[in-house]
Length: 170
Image (cartoon, rainbow, N blue to C red; front, side):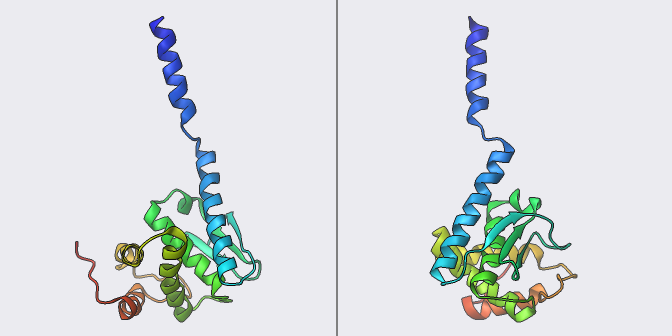
C-alpha cells in the first residue's frame, strides 16, 4: 500500500512539472505576445519570433527584411533579467524601424528597451533601468564588441545621459 501511495505522489509531482519543450514554447509565446502588443502600440506590422542561429557573440537579433526576431537556444534558457533585456532590445529595433545595425541605432534600441519593459512587462522605470544597467555591468570588460554595436563603455555613457549617473559596484 505504501509503495502505491508513493508511486501516485511521484507521478503527480512529475506530471505537474513542465517539460523543457513546453517551457521553451511557453517562453516563445510570451515573447510573441509582447512583440505583437508593441507592434500594435507603435503602429508597426507584426514581427515573427523564432528560435535559430544568430551571429557569434550575440544571443538574439532582429532581421529587418523579414521582420523577424530570432532568439538563440542560449537566450531562451538564460536568466529572466538577461532574457527580457535582449527581447526588449530586439523588439525596440522593430518598433523603431531600424534597417541596419550601427552604434547610434543600438543605443537607441537600448533606451527604447527601458520603455518597452515598463509598458509591456509592467516594470517601474527604476526596475527597467536597473535591468539594462545590470546587463551592461556584466559585459563591461568585454573587449570585442559585436559588429555594428558600440563598445559597452559608449552605451553606458549614453544610458547615464538619459537616466543618471550609475556605478557597477555592488
